[in-house]
Length: 192
Image (cartoon, rainbow, N blue to C red):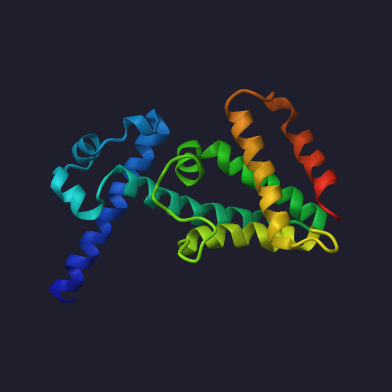
C-alpha cells in the first residue's frame, strides 16, 4: 500500500468516526449538543482536523442524512422483500419506515428536518437520497392506480408517512393506534 493510499484510508476513517460520533451524540442529547468543539473532544482530534473534513455542523448533518438514507433504503427493501403480495409489501414498507423514524430520531431529523445542505428532488440530489426515494417507489409504484403517476403517488404516500412519524414522535398522536393508522393509510391510498 502506498503512502497516499494509507493517508486516504486514514482520512476516510476519521470522517466515519466524526459522522458516527455526531450521530451518537445527537441520538443521546439532540442535535443542539453536537458542536465542533464537543466532537473534537470526543474523537480526540483538534477542531482544525474536524474542519479539514467538514466545513461545519451543516455538512456533518448532511453526512449523517446520507448515511441514514442508505440505511433506510436497505430497511425498506428488506421489509418489502419478506412480504408476499402488493398489500403486504405496502404495509411492510409503511411499518419499516415508521420503525426507522422511531428508532433513529436524530438521523431522521438530519434527513428531513434539519438543513444538511442537501438537494432534494433535483438533478443534483445525492444518490443515497435518490435511492431512498427509489426504495419507496419500487413498492408504491405498483399500487398507485390507473392513471396516477407513480412518483406523485409515492410523494403523497411518503408525506403521509412522514406526517405520522412526526406527529407520533411529538406526542400528538397516541402510539397505541399506530398499527390502525398504517392499515387505514394502506386501505385508503393504495390500490391493491
